[in-house]
Length: 165
Length: 241
Image 1 (cartoon, rainbow over the protein chains, first blue to last red):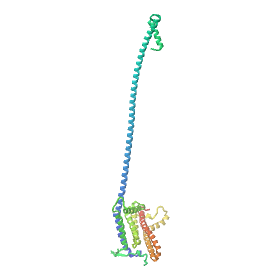
Image 2 (image 1 turned 180 degrees about the vertical axis):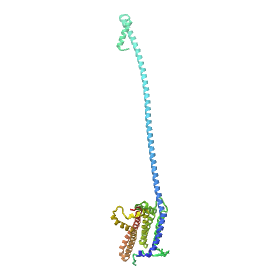
Image 3 (image 1 turned 30 degrees about the vertical axis):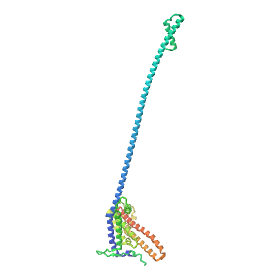
Image 4 (image 1 turned 90 degrees about the vertical axis):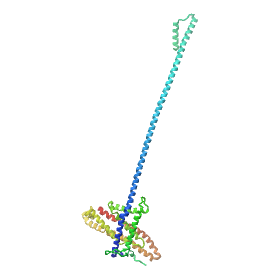
């Protein structure tokens, strides 16, 4: 068995020490630090990117919140304006209505007064006509001019009876 | 030409070197150790040339091998063992490269020699023992006395634990060496059948193809087992069970 040739042990062990020692030094000093550098920088990059993404997301959320606040404010403002306008318009309409009513009432009163005056005038004429007619009739029938006081009393009573004043 | 299936393990001196009375000849074994060193260094250093943030295929493989060993250490020996990461990584890649290079026809399998595997396992064993005593002082001997065992049981357990501790370098080295040697010998024996059986040699040839696949798996697995056991021993030295 070649494995048990003791004379071959020394060269194998010497070269194992040389090659393995070199490999150990090369890996520890050169190869592995390079790999760990790359892995570390990649990890850092990923962490940074994730952080940036989270920050941007937060910013977007804040912008959305601000937009919603602004929208709600605008809506409230519009609502208030509408209420105010409605109230103003209503007040104005009420004032105009009241004015129109007042004018109408004034005109109605005026017209009423006119009617009353015309009626009074007419009533006054009735008494005169009735007095003249009564005097005429009495004079024709009796041949005598009636007593003014008696005539007035009868006229008053009749006129009152007729409901004319 | 029927060859001895063990001839493939012969050490041939390429350059005779004598250094201070020690035979340091450059042998076929040494040549393949150098090849392994060059292959691993090229793989690791050339693969990371671009250091790109988004790795290509080669760089991905380098990073995967890095993370495989890093996770192996973290899972078995904890984060304190990370300072031994370069050693464990070198151990894993060196054994893996030697095992896989040995699968190339006409090549030489460095790890099929007990001298090499025992040297590595003895280095791990001595290193772990030094780390254990350096961290815990004489308290490291508590490793031999499992906690909570009754005194009568300890009489039996302590010798068993001591024996199992000192057998570690032997089991570690023999496992790797025997696996490599047995696989290669078997391949050689079947290869001999292919020629001697003539047309019927197609049967052992088919068997060899399957066996070669199995041997590649064994090559990877044994490198992994060797380094994960080194991690487990390291865990004992750091955490005392």
